Image (cartoon, rainbow, N blue to C red; front, side, top):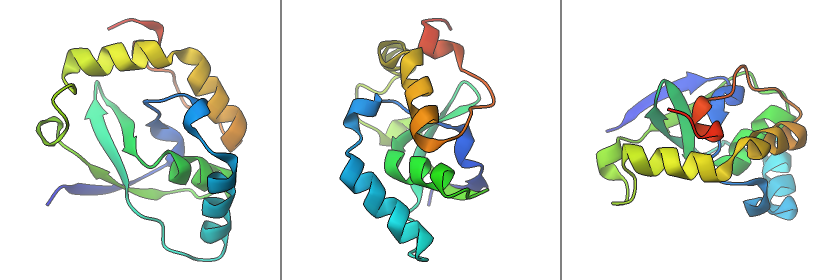
Length: 124
């Protein structure tokens, strides 16, 4: 069994751009959360002291939109992921996603990240 933690949704960082978010699906998730439907665990990878979303971007954005203070995450070890997911692969993915993705997620979710991981800027 993987480790489960409760964390603030604003410390969960995307590994994709906002273009992957379907507005209709997001509104459905927001509606479900507001109406008491249990959220699935957000699956994250812990890397460089941060949590990066492997599965659960909609839930993270919706949780921020409705003002949830905590969400449950499942920490997925790197060895359980696809073969491309090495430390170098993660760094390259985040560099490709870029800083604008963080600003877009903040704007859509109505929240502010406490900090911006250097990986999005192409640093290590």
